[in-house]
Length: 225
Image 1 (cartoon, one colour):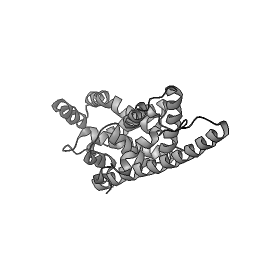
Image 2 (cartoon, helix red, strand yellow; image 1 turned 120 degrees about the horizontal axis):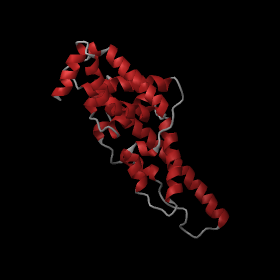
Image 3 (spheres, rainbow, N blue to C red; image 1 turned 90 degrees about the vertical axis):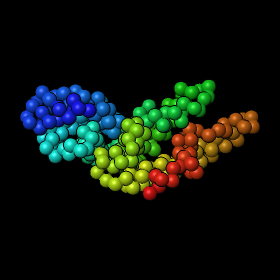
Image 4 (spheres, rainbow, N blue to C red; image 1 turned 60 degrees about the horizontal axis):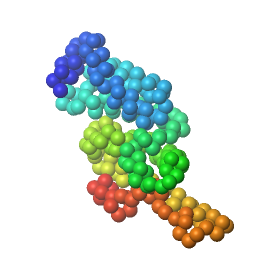
């Protein structure tokens, strides 16, 4: 927007108040990205502050023909990836990935609350296995709804690389979901045999399979490479 361009121009000229306006305009999106990457409110606050500090010191490197929001999110995502590489992943909640949340909400059972909590734990474990660049691509795609081009700009890579990361991320999630389903099926069979449950009880497909169903037949081929 024109007002944003004015703020950027004024900030480049040394106007601290103009940069403060930019911070106020983007502090929520930057914090949200940091929180969903890191999973901890306090660490997300630190990461957001560091993002704006880096943005201020690197403002002269901003290319005005690019979206300022993409440039800022690029700084935030790279900083968060660095933090993730220095520690074990903090699990995301199911609520932080809408496409996973929707898959879970569609699975209606009497014990819904307990089941969803169990599924959240499974999803966290699955996401814990994704490399930081894959995790960042998933968040930017499914939470921020960025295009492949925009994600590529944020992560400083090519669109084909982003499509590959998203495909491989879904591939890994599908493999883990399949393994989880197999383990649950075996456990259910043992339980039925042990407790002599009525025929058919204990069967069903958990939402983890639905989450990754697009990978095994309905995945967008354009994301493969």
